[in-house]
Length: 111
Image 1 (cartoon, rainbow, N blue to C red):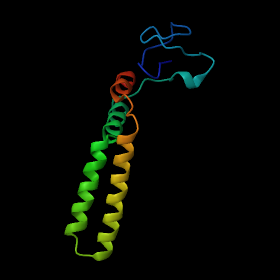
Image 2: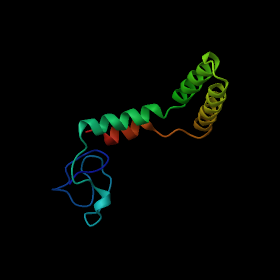
Image 3: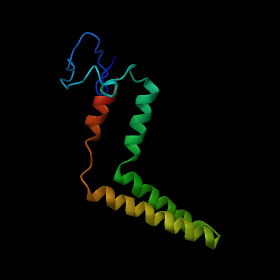
């Protein structure tokens, strides 16, 4: 039995994680993990978190604008332009709302 956030072994503890101090319920299997996260799972989580930054969406928008400029097909240009608009919209949405504390999420989920 391992805590979701800090991956601490909870077999000897009851009700609260000794590592991070957050509560858990032994009768609720959703409040803890049966096995710790593997290294590849932590890396996958870090990659997803890394790619959800506003500047990453902006980079994709710039790349699709460049693809729309340098492609020969007019149909592909329209599709690239629409995708670029979608990426710009996502960039603005990321900038408008308060970004989550990704560093804290990574600290909680790293082994």
